[in-house]
Amino acid sequence: MATAERDLARGAAGIAVENPATGGVIAAVTATSPQEVGALAARARAAQPAWAALGFDGRAQVLRRAQKWVTDHADRIVATIVSETGKTHDDAVISEIPYTASALGFWARQAPHYLADEKVRSSSPFLAGRKLVVRYEALGLVGVIGPWNYPLVNSFGDCIPALAAGNAVILKPSEVTPLTSLLMAAAMRECGLPEDVLIVAAGDGATGAAVIDAVDMVMFTGSTETGKKVMARAAETLTPVSLELGGKDPMIVLADADVERAAGAAAYYSMQNGGQTCVSVERVYVEAPVYDEFVDKLSRKVAALRQGASSGPGTVDVGAVTSPPQLDVVERHVEEARRAGARVLTGGAARDGDGRFYAPTVLVDVDHSMACMREETFGPTVPVMAVRDADEAVRLANDSPYGLSASVWTREAARGEALARRIECGVVCVNDAQLNYLALELPMGGWKASGLGSRHGAAGIRKYCRQQSLLVTRFAPPVDLQFYPFRARTTKLFGRAVRLLYGRGKRA
Ligand code: NDP
Image (cartoon, rainbow, N blue to C red; front, side, top):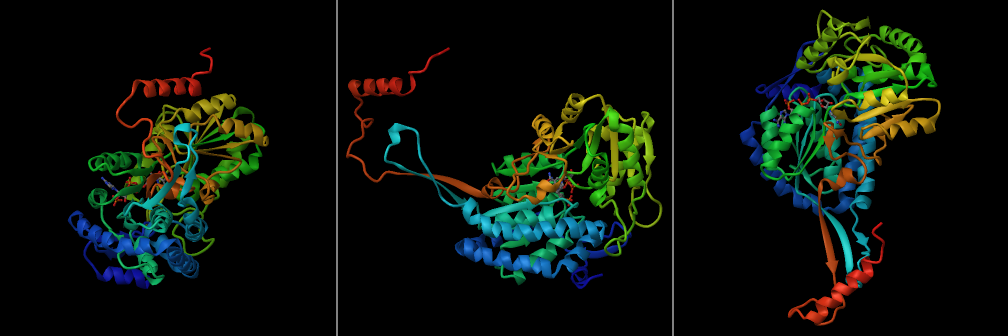
């Protein structure tokens, strides 16, 4: 057990944190009860004005120091993440650290640009001479509620733009994985973040609900089911929400694709992080001419994956199932598919012994009546289906309540892009998957049941702000035409002006 975890364990009462790869309890974290959240919010609100008053430069200094801290202490962060998620060392190094290090610098640099006053010119002649400005101001207190699959990226990561905008934040990590958030809160203090500007409320769903009641905006990442509850709760106080929810990401492989690359990508992007990534490849549609070749390559690659508790870089490829109920979902999807006629080419069972593991699994002979093609599995499985042509692939890809992200694989990039535009998802990659997540300039948000709002890009920080519009009149006569008393002549003049300005077009 690392020192940080041992310190936490000394607190004893509260949440017992388990290492899913070994089954052992590694720490005990004091839980924040729902009743305690109000007092935490009051502390955070008291600290926020001074943080906002530091300005973009002052806040950027802290974020840049944190960026250095993350790279200097990458080993410690990785060890913490691996211990509470059971993911591989490599998954944590490849996905969690680079994102967070780059995000700290990105928001430090971009916040002043995205949140700068915007001068607007109006096309209305009635406003001639008026100065129009859109400005952004920190909301005050933001609640970030995060899932267990990426304790750094999807919990602390969403705090970064909120802090850069000048907010205080209460972070409610999943009770399954609170250690990384606690570590990062301590790190931020070390880097000069004033006390109480970032408070971690470790607790369960009830604590999360209490956070919603206490904040000015909720940034939620998690399942669609819980997202609906979050939105309903926030509606009671008209608190704005941004929801990053589940997905069932389709991968479309066209007959002219580089099959070797597509099969390698299918193996990686379905199994990476044990398949527990919101933007995992969750279902694959392959054009008939290359179906057999693709399935052969994919199943060989998946069968060769090494699974187990990670003891360092390169020791295993696929880690544990982090959350206990998730294993039941994965087992149900595979069993139901098998009973309905699907074939398991490799894997297909949970592993006996210590830790919680499900063998990397390839399913074929699947169809859209099966849960494995319709519901989010969120585990190390990849169902593959042959399709007649690209049109059928697009139709099936869109036959889903989800719309998070998708990928299209073809040697003809322009055709891939044209197809991408027909897919009902917030993000579509051509000949790649997931990499858009590293483009912090590119908004990322789900359509349909996959979410509301987005992270990254200008919208990814403006959502943490109040928008204010200013209209400033510097030079004006003592009386405007529309002022009282109304006069028939003036009103008719307005009518004529409107017809002249807007009524000259044709109706057909
Ligand atoms: P959950 O929805 O179960 O939980 C998410 C967070 O909400 C946890 O902190 C949880 O606490 C908390 N919570 C539970 N009930 C409530 C409530 N009533 N009010 C407020 N908060 C509550 O998601 P998982 O943790 O299981 O994460 C996996 C899901 O997250 C998948 O569906 C995945 O697709 C999605 N996800 C989406 C991403 C995206 O960007 N679109 C990125 C990453 C994951 P506790 O855990 O303590 O119960």
